[in-house]
Image (cartoon, rainbow, N blue to C red; front, side, top):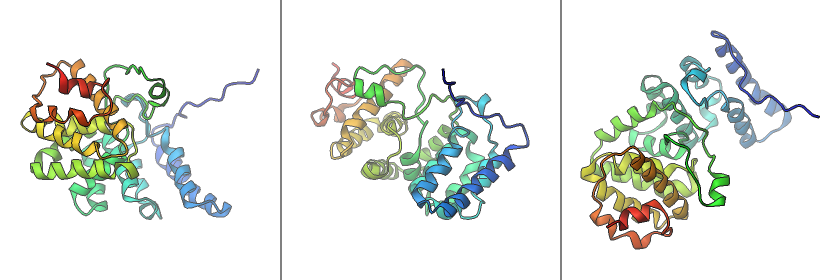
Length: 274
């Protein structure tokens, strides 16, 4: 009987993470250049090498220090390697694991303004939607494909995102919401994007909830990803209800329920409850 390979994250002793991880990452471009590997595959190798270390399910498993994470961005060629959306993905990881202080400078360095930065962060983010229970899928296809993100309890990103959202005008928030949805077919990274939009735009402020949900529904109705958006928004509604939070009124948004595709989902039910 063949033995099962060990896929656990190797333990890195304190003080060693800097040299082991950084030296390993530096060798990947060198090896890829020797082998004539494309830049696309080279980036996939870098992401794969760091994936297990940067996706701990809880804080006790975190092995990569904030110092090491920031040092990645000082490696030769690193800042030239990634696209704006890919930077959004990296910074979303950093915010989630380490919080504001260690990552905000990178965000300001990489984007022309914080509005554009937030668009890229939302598009690139994984593990920003945190559930208190494992979701139950009734659709077999969704049950087989839902593991876009591993279970993860670390979520330091919410403080930074919430603070920035509060500083913007309503028009700015609407612009960010529209841009994320319109660019999602090309750049969306995470299946749960719609859940993040519901949490950070719709129920963030009850005074704007009806307007934001109306815009969210109208925008997704023109998107190639409407089916997926309705699913993700619905799981966010399910989690919101699970936490027994007060429910906003959605008078204007009710008039847009005819634009929804999935009558069996929580989003449709929310707009059609008596």
